[in-house]
Image 1: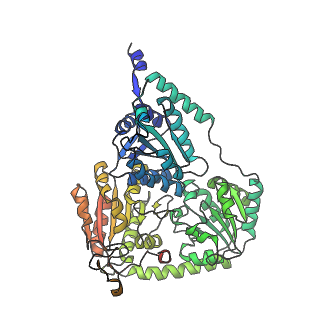
Image 2 (image 1 turned 30 degrees about the vertical axis):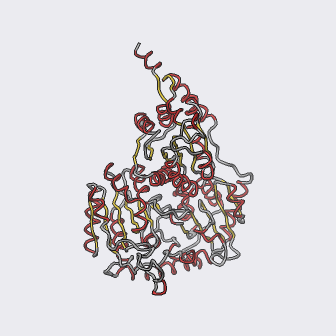
Image 3 (image 1 turned 45 degrees about the vertical axis):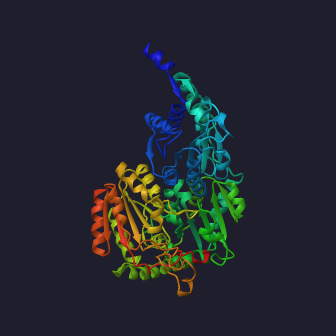
Length: 575
């Protein structure tokens, strides 16, 4: 009788959605609850999907995006209808721009009330379509399992990205028996498995692999460039094997750092201009020839360079028109190149003119940078605290902390100073240059990689976008240390010339300035976390040592000379 009652018990749309997400393998969901999705969050948690409740949908969306990158499985974002959905677009679009899998699920107004000015009414399918690979709506409770599995599969197929599932409030309140729900979920799972995604196959991939190996072999100045797509594909072992076997220097894009350790002797990071300016063949793996790589064009690149572009999306290769395009998963394609090279082996010796030139330039630049880093400058510039932070992070050993970096000067200088020797241990503003990602990233990293410490190194402007999420860190007791470089504003406070101090509002604060020496560490203390103020090397070292050992939520407020940075970091020409 009890079993029969369980089978005939009614479950609503919220419960069906939670059960379907759990059955599809989802383990974490990020979001903000309210009408009409509060019950969905609770039902999902009961089904085994941990719900992380945020203070703002944008931060929750950035968390879901980063979770997709770190785990290779879709991050889940839950929002309420109308304005909640609009706020969630930040995370959805960020995921799609970075090619990270994310599924955004939003409640929406009841279908019978569409067009009547219902509470938070919005055409959410139309709103999300420009930013999503797939945007679908469940018009009845029976649609939910099928659409959950379909949308999750779409996030990881081809080039990963964001997808959207809309569940109207009337659908969330419809009911089925438990047995009907179980049957629908089982059928959706079976259909998803049967139609499992097969990686795209390039017609001439075998021929292309042979050509790629030949191009690298014959090159006088070859270079391997890899990005966060290679990190996402878990291609680290195959790429390191390629580098070690062939002796070809390599260059990572910012979030590709650590795929091959930064400390590797063939790293060309410190000789970037020489490497990209003089290479004659460049193997680009999991990176796009966009602004981060100067579009692959002169004068940064040689006009005669031959690009071998490896990308999971054929459209990307059609867009860039490289000398040779290889469509496929980064790990698989590099494995095939390694196999081809094994049959026709070659290796550039350390004395090879190209390797020697890269090595010498790298050493020269490192020596110059280390000379700057060795000085204890007080009031702090950017170099002194970054050196201290770098050394503290390296002292943690393995598993290495995940470093979250955002800001203008803080992120740009930090990219050169901070060291990544393990893959997927750097998260930054990404392809879109998105500010405000920091605390969302931190929370995603802490739940995706619970064995790792998470260390955010942020400018005070970047921190301000998501600072309220320090309460979320405390609420869940996550091992996150947030280091704020406080220089009184965007780029460093009031930098106006006397000629600019005119007009009726000349006495207003500068558009770039914040309250001087703001007590950001006290924000954390207000919620029960640990706050530190650091104005000297000893104070910073002490704060890092204590907070890293405690592995509890902390904010270290590092006071920086407001005149130490430059406008827009290294992007002045864009402003």
